Picture 1 (tube, helix red, strand yellow):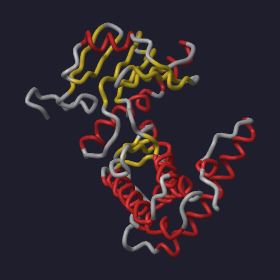
Picture 2 (cartoon, helix red, strand yellow):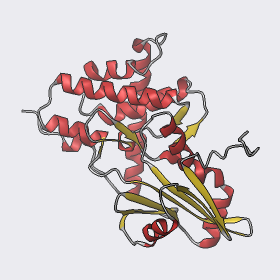
Picture 3 (cartoon, helix red, strand yellow):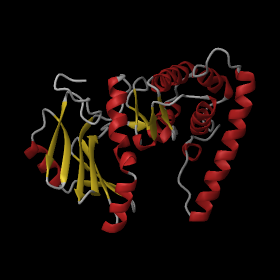
Picture 4 (cartoon, one colour):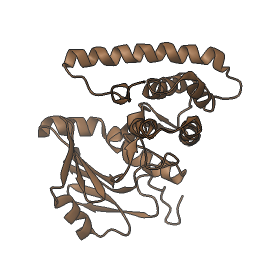
Length: 280
Protein backbone atom coordinates (compact mmCIF):
# COMPACT_ATOMS: atom_id res chain seq x y z
CA UNK A 1 0.00 0.00 0.00
CA UNK A 2 1.18 3.57 -0.65
CA UNK A 3 1.30 6.35 1.94
CA UNK A 4 -2.13 7.43 0.73
CA UNK A 5 -3.44 3.95 1.43
CA UNK A 6 -3.98 3.05 -2.21
CA UNK A 7 -2.61 0.15 -4.18
CA UNK A 8 -0.06 1.40 -6.78
CA UNK A 9 -1.49 1.55 -10.28
CA UNK A 10 0.66 -0.62 -12.60
CA UNK A 11 -0.45 1.60 -15.48
CA UNK A 12 1.13 4.62 -13.81
CA UNK A 13 4.59 4.18 -12.22
CA UNK A 14 6.15 7.05 -10.30
CA UNK A 15 7.67 8.79 -13.34
CA UNK A 16 4.22 9.02 -14.96
CA UNK A 17 0.97 10.72 -14.01
CA UNK A 18 -2.66 9.92 -14.67
CA UNK A 19 -5.13 12.58 -15.77
CA UNK A 20 -8.85 12.01 -16.01
CA UNK A 21 -11.46 14.01 -17.87
CA UNK A 22 -14.98 13.25 -19.06
CA UNK A 23 -14.66 10.46 -21.62
CA UNK A 24 -10.89 10.15 -21.31
CA UNK A 25 -8.11 8.83 -19.07
CA UNK A 26 -4.47 9.60 -19.92
CA UNK A 27 -1.22 8.13 -18.59
CA UNK A 28 1.57 10.55 -19.43
CA UNK A 29 5.29 10.78 -18.69
CA UNK A 30 5.78 13.46 -16.05
CA UNK A 31 8.06 15.72 -18.10
CA UNK A 32 5.54 16.00 -20.95
CA UNK A 33 2.88 18.71 -20.69
CA UNK A 34 -0.69 18.26 -21.83
CA UNK A 35 -0.12 20.86 -24.53
CA UNK A 36 2.96 19.06 -25.87
CA UNK A 37 1.11 15.75 -26.00
CA UNK A 38 -1.86 17.34 -27.75
CA UNK A 39 0.41 18.95 -30.35
CA UNK A 40 1.98 15.57 -31.04
CA UNK A 41 -1.41 13.85 -31.33
CA UNK A 42 -2.75 16.52 -33.68
CA UNK A 43 0.17 16.16 -36.09
CA UNK A 44 -0.65 14.05 -39.19
CA UNK A 45 2.84 12.54 -39.15
CA UNK A 46 4.12 9.92 -41.58
CA UNK A 47 1.96 6.77 -41.98
CA UNK A 48 3.78 3.55 -41.06
CA UNK A 49 1.04 0.94 -41.11
CA UNK A 50 -2.74 0.80 -41.46
CA UNK A 51 -4.89 -2.23 -40.70
CA UNK A 52 -8.55 -2.84 -39.85
CA UNK A 53 -7.57 -2.71 -36.17
CA UNK A 54 -4.99 0.08 -35.93
CA UNK A 55 -3.44 3.10 -37.60
CA UNK A 56 0.24 3.71 -36.92
CA UNK A 57 2.19 6.85 -37.83
CA UNK A 58 5.52 8.44 -37.03
CA UNK A 59 5.63 11.92 -35.53
CA UNK A 60 9.25 12.98 -35.11
CA UNK A 61 10.87 10.82 -32.44
CA UNK A 62 7.60 9.09 -31.60
CA UNK A 63 5.16 6.51 -32.92
CA UNK A 64 1.43 7.06 -32.46
CA UNK A 65 -0.68 3.89 -32.62
CA UNK A 66 -4.44 4.44 -32.61
CA UNK A 67 -7.19 1.86 -32.63
CA UNK A 68 -9.22 1.87 -35.84
CA UNK A 69 -12.35 0.48 -37.44
CA UNK A 70 -16.04 1.36 -37.54
CA UNK A 71 -17.05 2.78 -34.15
CA UNK A 72 -19.44 -0.02 -33.07
CA UNK A 73 -16.91 -2.71 -34.02
CA UNK A 74 -13.91 -0.87 -32.55
CA UNK A 75 -15.80 -0.03 -29.35
CA UNK A 76 -16.85 -3.65 -28.85
CA UNK A 77 -13.33 -4.89 -29.54
CA UNK A 78 -11.67 -2.28 -27.30
CA UNK A 79 -14.07 -2.95 -24.44
CA UNK A 80 -14.06 -6.73 -24.60
CA UNK A 81 -10.27 -6.78 -25.06
CA UNK A 82 -9.49 -3.90 -22.72
CA UNK A 83 -6.69 -5.72 -20.94
CA UNK A 84 -5.17 -6.78 -24.25
CA UNK A 85 -5.25 -3.16 -25.47
CA UNK A 86 -3.35 -2.13 -22.34
CA UNK A 87 -0.89 -4.98 -22.64
CA UNK A 88 1.78 -3.27 -24.76
CA UNK A 89 1.84 -0.32 -22.34
CA UNK A 90 2.13 -2.53 -19.26
CA UNK A 91 4.76 -4.72 -20.93
CA UNK A 92 6.87 -1.69 -21.85
CA UNK A 93 6.77 -0.37 -18.29
CA UNK A 94 7.60 -3.73 -16.74
CA UNK A 95 10.38 -4.65 -19.14
CA UNK A 96 12.10 -1.27 -18.86
CA UNK A 97 11.95 -1.62 -15.08
CA UNK A 98 13.85 -4.91 -15.53
CA UNK A 99 16.37 -3.23 -17.88
CA UNK A 100 15.07 -5.07 -20.93
CA UNK A 101 15.24 -2.73 -23.91
CA UNK A 102 11.94 -1.78 -25.55
CA UNK A 103 10.79 1.45 -27.21
CA UNK A 104 10.35 4.13 -24.54
CA UNK A 105 6.69 4.64 -23.58
CA UNK A 106 5.40 8.23 -23.56
CA UNK A 107 1.62 8.11 -23.18
CA UNK A 108 -1.41 5.83 -23.22
CA UNK A 109 -4.94 7.18 -23.63
CA UNK A 110 -8.32 5.52 -23.36
CA UNK A 111 -11.41 7.25 -24.73
CA UNK A 112 -14.73 6.01 -23.38
CA UNK A 113 -18.43 6.69 -23.36
CA UNK A 114 -20.88 5.27 -20.83
CA UNK A 115 -18.37 2.64 -19.76
CA UNK A 116 -17.55 1.59 -23.33
CA UNK A 117 -13.95 2.03 -24.52
CA UNK A 118 -14.37 3.77 -27.87
CA UNK A 119 -10.67 4.21 -28.76
CA UNK A 120 -7.13 3.80 -27.47
CA UNK A 121 -3.93 5.68 -28.32
CA UNK A 122 -0.41 4.48 -27.52
CA UNK A 123 2.61 6.77 -27.97
CA UNK A 124 6.11 5.32 -27.82
CA UNK A 125 9.66 5.82 -29.12
CA UNK A 126 10.48 5.55 -32.81
CA UNK A 127 13.68 3.51 -33.18
CA UNK A 128 15.43 5.85 -35.58
CA UNK A 129 18.53 4.41 -37.23
CA UNK A 130 17.70 0.84 -36.16
CA UNK A 131 17.05 -2.22 -38.30
CA UNK A 132 15.60 -5.59 -37.47
CA UNK A 133 18.08 -8.35 -36.70
CA UNK A 134 17.46 -10.13 -40.00
CA UNK A 135 18.48 -7.02 -41.88
CA UNK A 136 21.41 -6.47 -39.51
CA UNK A 137 22.60 -10.01 -40.20
CA UNK A 138 22.31 -9.34 -43.94
CA UNK A 139 24.44 -6.22 -43.40
CA UNK A 140 27.11 -8.36 -41.73
CA UNK A 141 27.04 -10.86 -44.59
CA UNK A 142 27.31 -8.19 -47.27
CA UNK A 143 30.10 -6.40 -45.42
CA UNK A 144 32.20 -9.57 -45.43
CA UNK A 145 32.08 -10.21 -41.69
CA UNK A 146 33.81 -13.33 -40.41
CA UNK A 147 32.68 -16.08 -38.00
CA UNK A 148 33.79 -14.12 -34.91
CA UNK A 149 31.51 -11.20 -35.82
CA UNK A 150 28.53 -13.50 -36.36
CA UNK A 151 29.24 -15.36 -33.13
CA UNK A 152 29.47 -12.11 -31.14
CA UNK A 153 26.22 -10.83 -32.66
CA UNK A 154 24.37 -14.04 -31.80
CA UNK A 155 25.86 -14.13 -28.31
CA UNK A 156 24.64 -10.63 -27.48
CA UNK A 157 21.23 -11.48 -28.91
CA UNK A 158 21.01 -14.63 -26.79
CA UNK A 159 21.80 -12.52 -23.70
CA UNK A 160 18.94 -10.16 -24.59
CA UNK A 161 16.47 -13.03 -25.04
CA UNK A 162 17.58 -14.53 -21.73
CA UNK A 163 17.00 -11.16 -20.04
CA UNK A 164 13.48 -11.08 -21.48
CA UNK A 165 12.73 -14.52 -20.04
CA UNK A 166 14.40 -13.49 -16.78
CA UNK A 167 11.85 -10.69 -16.44
CA UNK A 168 9.08 -13.35 -16.35
CA UNK A 169 7.91 -12.27 -19.79
CA UNK A 170 7.11 -14.35 -22.84
CA UNK A 171 7.03 -12.87 -26.35
CA UNK A 172 4.78 -15.04 -28.51
CA UNK A 173 6.24 -13.70 -31.78
CA UNK A 174 9.99 -13.56 -31.27
CA UNK A 175 10.85 -13.58 -34.95
CA UNK A 176 13.78 -11.52 -36.13
CA UNK A 177 11.47 -8.82 -37.47
CA UNK A 178 10.38 -8.00 -33.91
CA UNK A 179 13.90 -7.46 -32.56
CA UNK A 180 15.76 -4.29 -33.53
CA UNK A 181 19.38 -3.20 -33.16
CA UNK A 182 21.66 -0.42 -34.28
CA UNK A 183 25.02 -1.90 -33.35
CA UNK A 184 24.54 -5.68 -33.01
CA UNK A 185 25.18 -5.39 -29.26
CA UNK A 186 22.04 -3.79 -27.82
CA UNK A 187 18.64 -5.15 -28.83
CA UNK A 188 15.12 -3.74 -28.55
CA UNK A 189 11.97 -5.86 -28.59
CA UNK A 190 8.89 -4.54 -30.38
CA UNK A 191 5.31 -5.74 -30.99
CA UNK A 192 4.72 -5.80 -27.24
CA UNK A 193 1.06 -6.71 -27.75
CA UNK A 194 2.42 -10.26 -28.07
CA UNK A 195 4.10 -10.21 -24.63
CA UNK A 196 2.64 -12.10 -21.67
CA UNK A 197 3.81 -11.03 -18.22
CA UNK A 198 4.18 -13.10 -15.06
CA UNK A 199 4.21 -16.45 -16.81
CA UNK A 200 6.43 -19.50 -16.52
CA UNK A 201 8.82 -19.73 -19.46
CA UNK A 202 8.24 -23.43 -19.91
CA UNK A 203 9.62 -25.85 -22.49
CA UNK A 204 6.75 -25.27 -24.94
CA UNK A 205 7.26 -21.49 -24.95
CA UNK A 206 11.03 -21.83 -25.21
CA UNK A 207 10.70 -24.20 -28.16
CA UNK A 208 8.34 -21.83 -29.99
CA UNK A 209 10.78 -18.94 -29.53
CA UNK A 210 13.76 -21.01 -30.67
CA UNK A 211 11.87 -22.12 -33.78
CA UNK A 212 11.07 -18.47 -34.58
CA UNK A 213 14.67 -17.35 -34.11
CA UNK A 214 16.12 -20.31 -36.00
CA UNK A 215 13.75 -19.61 -38.89
CA UNK A 216 14.99 -16.01 -39.03
CA UNK A 217 18.65 -16.97 -39.39
CA UNK A 218 18.94 -20.46 -40.88
CA UNK A 219 18.96 -19.24 -44.49
CA UNK A 220 22.13 -17.25 -43.85
CA UNK A 221 23.95 -19.12 -41.08
CA UNK A 222 24.92 -22.74 -40.55
CA UNK A 223 24.66 -25.08 -37.59
CA UNK A 224 28.18 -24.27 -36.39
CA UNK A 225 26.89 -20.85 -35.36
CA UNK A 226 23.23 -21.53 -34.68
CA UNK A 227 23.61 -24.51 -32.34
CA UNK A 228 25.77 -22.58 -29.80
CA UNK A 229 23.37 -19.62 -30.16
CA UNK A 230 20.35 -21.68 -29.14
CA UNK A 231 22.33 -23.63 -26.55
CA UNK A 232 23.13 -20.36 -24.77
CA UNK A 233 19.38 -19.94 -24.27
CA UNK A 234 18.87 -23.47 -22.88
CA UNK A 235 18.97 -24.44 -19.21
CA UNK A 236 22.02 -26.61 -18.38
CA UNK A 237 20.01 -29.79 -18.02
CA UNK A 238 18.71 -29.67 -21.59
CA UNK A 239 20.80 -31.47 -24.21
CA UNK A 240 21.12 -29.64 -27.58
CA UNK A 241 21.48 -33.03 -29.31
CA UNK A 242 17.84 -33.81 -28.53
CA UNK A 243 16.66 -30.17 -28.66
CA UNK A 244 17.92 -29.22 -32.12
CA UNK A 245 15.96 -31.89 -34.07
CA UNK A 246 12.77 -30.53 -32.50
CA UNK A 247 13.76 -26.99 -33.50
CA UNK A 248 14.55 -28.02 -37.08
CA UNK A 249 11.29 -29.94 -37.44
CA UNK A 250 9.35 -27.02 -36.03
CA UNK A 251 11.10 -24.56 -38.33
CA UNK A 252 10.23 -26.60 -41.42
CA UNK A 253 6.58 -26.75 -40.35
CA UNK A 254 6.57 -23.02 -39.62
CA UNK A 255 8.12 -22.17 -42.99
CA UNK A 256 5.61 -24.36 -44.85
CA UNK A 257 2.71 -22.80 -42.95
CA UNK A 258 3.87 -19.23 -43.62
CA UNK A 259 4.55 -19.82 -47.31
CA UNK A 260 1.16 -21.53 -47.74
CA UNK A 261 -0.47 -18.46 -46.22
CA UNK A 262 1.46 -16.20 -48.61
CA UNK A 263 0.39 -18.32 -51.57
CA UNK A 264 -3.24 -18.07 -50.47
CA UNK A 265 -2.95 -14.30 -50.16
CA UNK A 266 -1.08 -13.99 -53.44
CA UNK A 267 1.90 -12.24 -51.86
CA UNK A 268 5.57 -13.11 -51.63
CA UNK A 269 7.49 -10.86 -49.21
CA UNK A 270 11.24 -10.87 -49.65
CA UNK A 271 13.08 -13.07 -47.17
CA UNK A 272 16.68 -12.80 -46.10
CA UNK A 273 17.62 -15.67 -48.45
CA UNK A 274 16.38 -13.60 -51.42
CA UNK A 275 18.85 -10.85 -50.59
CA UNK A 276 21.93 -12.94 -49.89
CA UNK A 277 24.82 -12.37 -52.29
CA UNK A 278 25.42 -15.28 -54.69
CA UNK A 279 27.97 -17.90 -53.70
CA UNK A 280 30.93 -17.73 -56.09
